Structure formats: structure tokens, C-alpha cells
Image (cartoon, rainbow, N blue to C red; front, side):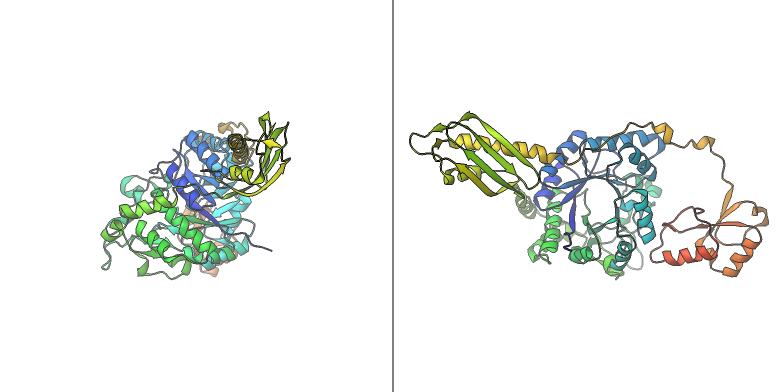
Length: 519
């Protein structure tokens, strides 16, 4: 079975970056709206800009994903669902989501809209990916902190779900989706799209002046290997970065995938346009250490000079004619001309307003017809075949052929712009929100170990996973009549199976857990 090429997914913080990504070879892009985006500082897109973006991309065969990936408060659910509906009306290809409550609403309101689990959900274990697939996610964006082996295990455990992995761009010192540093220091929460990036500040530890700042992820050379282990999409970080960066990173990704290597000049442009004294592949390779740390120094900034930025802008100045189209032209004297345009999936046919007259001198030849029809100009279309049916008698002007060509391609663009027909249901938000004020109080406590006071015998006790290491003590506690649940850690890299076995030995009852990774 032939394996599909891994998708190149590029960031677009604004309309200029959309053009840079598409013309540089992206298969898909991801954008944010003016609200509920984990990159609130980017330009982002209002409703009209979103519609124009989707139309532009779809005409060129490129998908668009909307990052609606912040945590949502109850009083924001109506606005968030309205945004999801607007995105569906704009014909968006998928939503990238973090908030589970919003997911349940979207599944009811727009059942056909594909959902992708954001990296903010900290998907880093096989059971976590499986749980989200069963919840209705078609794709999960795996944590940036995973190794190749860990990603392979996720795919083998749940091959039904698509996997998306970051291959280039910024890395956080903390695990994706679990950082509260910015919120604690200045009230700007990363889970609300407002991270102030305090980890980039000069903080000293054992001689390291920037002890919390990691180099950017530079794992583009792993694209083919990621494809082999089951990754569907290679994601580039950078919605806050300039269009020139988007062009450089997308070009490098395309070369890595299609050529098996990145050309030296492309690699140098990528390093120069943005780096933190080089890149790291420490997470994917599993080689973590001091060499992963770096920050923006003077030399890193000045390399992105005006000449380099000009060269990068020139690289995507012109339309990339990536859509193959065949024409079929019929011209007969005394009849209206017809021209059909076929992109392999859709066919449109247009007809001239006037009938073709008999030529007094030179009738329309195949060569002259092809010359006019191949002038697709600054459009995404490349004419790969022209079939002509000419009677050798008709006189047709170049202007008439050009007008027919433009009309056919315009009609084809209209058809290519719409890929979906989502059904949008009206739902009452209040019917789906739990009234916490009227909920029955939960009678439970948490404990880091099994040193539990007898006064708590009638309560549900959630014990930290590490506190269940002594099987005999667990047995005695259960025999004494205590009801034990497991408080799983927020992240369980490589320890999920051990945690499941420990919980099973504790006669853990399914459903009695507070936090964790699909334990």
C-alpha cells in the first residue's frame, strides 16, 4: 500500500503569512480568531478575514485549521460556540480544541466538523490518545516533549487517530499545557493565550544565564521517519512570527520531505531568520541535556537583515501554480464556443456569448488557441493538457479566447472554494451547562500516601499514585473499609503502564480518578 506523504502544516498569524505559507508549499495552515486563541498576541482573523483565508487556501488545495484552543469559562461558552459556528460557515477544515466542555457542545451543534486535540491537552501517552479518539477527536497534536519511540507507541496503540507532531519552532521549558509560570508572575495565563514568556528572561542556575530558555525545535530532518512511524502531519510553530519566517520554515520542511534533505542555503536562511543560537532535536532524539538550552543573542537578531528578508519575500512574491487543470475547447463556425475546465475532481463548462463567424482570412488554429488558453497569469492554475475540437473554418479573436478562459477558471475557483456542507444545529447552551451551585457536595479528600486518619473512613480518598507502592499496605487499607481512588500525576511519560498495573493491584475502581493521562 502506498503511504501518503506527511502533511506540512504551517502557521499563519495573519493574512500575509497565509500567502507566504501557501506559496512556499504548505499542505495546510492553522490560524487563530480574534478570541479564544492560544496566541492572542498574533494578528489573528476576524470573520471576514477567515472566510477570505479559507477561500484562498481551498482554491489552491490547502486545508485551514482554526486554533480555538484556550480554556473556556462557562460564561464564554456561548461566544465560543458561536465562533465555531462561524468557522463552520466559513468552511474551515478542522478546529483545534483544548476545552473538553466546548468539545461536547460542538459535537452536538456541528456534528460533522473535525476536531483536533490541541497540544495544550498534553497528549503524551497511548491511553490518552485513545481516550480522545473515543471522545470524537479525529487527530491529536502530541506533546512536543515526546521521543520518536513514544510517538511510535501511541500510533501502534491507537492507529485509528491521526497524529500531528511539531517539527520546528519554539519549545517551552514546561510541559505543553501545564505551565502556570506566566500566570503566577503576572496574571497572564498561557492557557488563555496570554503567555508573557518569562522563561526567556535571564535566570541564572549553575552558570547558565538563561536557565529556563530552550533553543527552538529543529527536527525537520525527522520528517520521513515521523511519516514511517505513523505521523500524519508535521507542524511548524510560529503564529507570532513574521511571514518571512513562515516561508523559510515551510520551504525547509518541503525539501526535507520531498528531497530527503534540506539544502545548505535553505538551512542557513532558516537559521538566520530566527534562532536561539541554533536548534535542538533533544526531545525527538531522546538526547536531553545542556545543549538544548539557548536564547536570542545579538548575533541571532542581526542575521535577519533587510537583504535576507527581501530574498525571502521574493521567494513567495509570485503565485505558485500548483493546481493542474485540463481544457477542452470546441469551436465551430455558426455555433457558440465552449470551454471545459477539469481539475481532476470538478468540471465546469462555459459558453461564449456570440457564435463564431466564418473566417475571411485565417481560421483559428490549434497553436493559436493553445497560446491564449495557457496564459493563466497570476492564478493558481497550471494548464497540463488542452484538447481542441476545431472545424478549421471559424474566426475567433484572442480577446474572446482570453475572456472564455478567465470565465472558466473563475467558475472553477468558485467550485474549489467550498469543500464541506456542515449541518449546524441550534442548541440551548443552558441545557448543557451544569449548575454548580445546586450540585451535591462531593465528600472526598486527597492524600499523598495511605497514612489516613480513621475519621476519614466514610469518605472517598484519592491517593497519589506514588503512595500506592506498598501492596500490603494497600490491601490492609482496603480491608479496613477505606474507599480508595487514584490521583494520577499530570504527566506520565513512559510510566502509564506501570501506573495502570499499580492501580489495578489497588483494586482501583474505574472512573474514580481526579487528574491524569487516561489512566
